[in-house]
Image 1: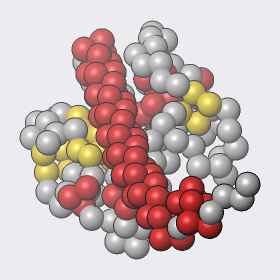
Image 2: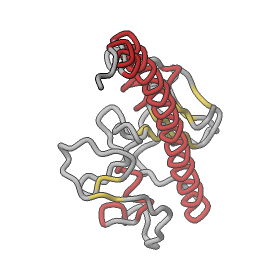
Image 3: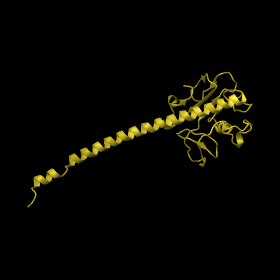
Image 4: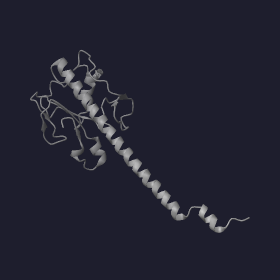
Length: 198
């Protein structure tokens, strides 16, 4: 006995029904992707803020131990005490705080003030959210060096013109500019910088 043609057409999907199902799946997938991307961005921002807080605490502990900041005595102005931008890497400070060989002159008691995650990757590879073992630079979750500001003249403020165009009334500050650089590589929006003093 043959199944009537009308019954067969009722058992199969029509092209319109199939397209509707595919559209619904695509919409749901895009909603999940958007939520996941937002969660990942929030996690990176939290990690950057945590790293910045660790750097500030380590510098303050160094100050408590030695009565001075972990900078060379020849640096006497706040504009000279900016590390991680302008050709001066943040490893200048991070190595002193980690007590690696190049930082022991400033840290003669050999105290390890900070223990960040260190990865052994080539300097040509974009390092993210760790200290590069070969260079000693500490990178934010977007692969940009943290910028460290220190009050070299001990006047109670730091020169933050590199990121905000003004000064901040703190002794130590750290900035993460990676998110703004990734979001708009041509002209990063300074309002997207993560600043420890805000």
